[in-house]
Length: 193
Image (cartoon, rainbow, N blue to C red):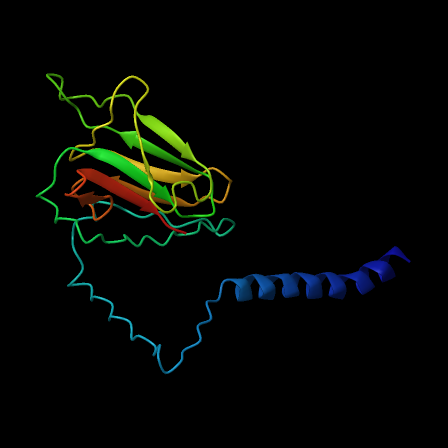
């Protein structure tokens, strides 16, 4: 009797496992719909073995494990009419605008200052509610002094709601974000969805 149950149950188990594998594979597919206003882009050809660089890239990327999908945030800096190109910037305030629907923590690692150029200052962070400072942004400050960002400082932001969204890392004056506003002498960091 137990053998008959096993023989009847085996095809059902195999069918269910097969359906799960097919569902997993289908969930990994990316489907795009093209319209006349949005034609498909032809991908650039892969470099041949002789065209590939011999040295490893300076910033290796880690591939996510098959069981975890890590969302990649869309980083689109919002250009301001008063921004100047990198190299023509100065020290200034930091204004942050959280335009995302996530509670966000912005962390700053300031570059070394003074005689000791070997160690960074203590990192600091600020928390933002979803949409906080969305239109004008908020100027950040330190508990005991005024915050002045300078070229080389490192900024990163990440969601606090478990969504694993992050923005950055940004190196002030080296990356396109944050942007420099020469009129107000401020760095602007806009966190977009």
